[in-house]
Length: 91
Image 1 (cartoon, rainbow, N blue to C red):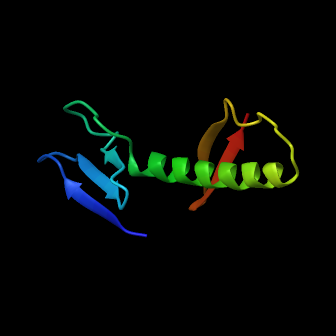
Image 2: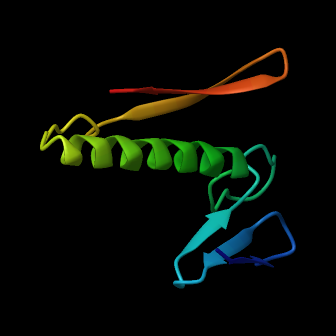
């Protein structure tokens, strides 16, 4: 697995691209000037965890021939406490 990261402008905007050519724009959500043009790296991490977990669950449900639509409108949040982070997924 390989990705490329390039700086797009003189501000905080970056483009990360995978080997298939798909890309994601990353930006600093806490900046005080300028428009936020991408997602934050922490949001990307949360999206990745949510996607990975969801794909695993769908694969298990498919093996069980269960056509559940559980993840149609899923939500997630990142909870931090005492320096530890946990991901909370809900429907």
